[in-house]
Every structure is written in C-alpha cells, then in structure tokens.
Image (tube, rainbow, N blue to C red; front, side, top):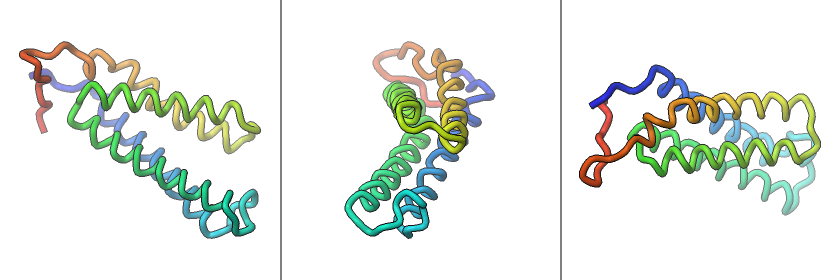
Amino acid sequence: MTTPPSTVRTTRLLVLLNALLWLLFGIITAAGVHPSFREAGLLRWAMAGSAFLAAIVLAALAEMLKRRPRIGCILTVALLAVMILASLLDDFGLADLLFVLITLLPLALLLKDRSWYLRPTMGGQQEQPAA
C-alpha cells in the first residue's frame, strides 16, 4: 500500500469548502437575500435547489475521494471543470472570479495527483488507502 500524496487531504477539504459555498449560496437564495433572486418565484427556487444539489454532490464526491475509486476522481474533475466553465460563460464579476479560483485549486490538485487516484488495479480491485 502506498501512502497518499500530502495534497490529497487538502484536495478533499477544498472540495468540501466548495460544497459549503454552494450550501451558503442556496440558503441565501432561498431566503430571498440574494439581490438577483429576491422575488419569490420559480427561478429563485430552481437556483436554490440547484445550489443545494451541487453542495450534496460535492460533499458525496469528497467522501468518495477518501476511498479513492477511479470514478470519484473522474466525476470530481468533470464536475469542477463544468462549474468553472459555467461561471466563465455567465456575466463575470468579482464573486465569479473568487468562485473560479476556489474551484480551480482542487481541480489542479486532482490533476496533479491523478496517478495516485487512477493507478492500475491488481486483480480487479484497487488497494484501499490506509485510514
């Protein structure tokens, strides 16, 4: 069994931080405090629901990364890349820049440590990392 790179734990914490930011955005939007979604309506609830869903998925992916399955790494990279791309295609402001930077950091670390997450399996089973 190999020991994980030192950045693996940092990556998981950054993915969890991202989930927390989505959760906070969802709460702010649902409460009607966000300036773009003050009026109660379908758009406000769709945005809040999407934010809550993003938070749940990111938290689940962070948990998957702890167990080190290939699919967890691939899905996390894909989701973070899509989130960055969506932010860049929207009206871009200071909040978007901060979000992109916070999302880009765990993405870069995942790509840096991809050999640890994606290393070949032995006998069809990946080694489980030490707890």
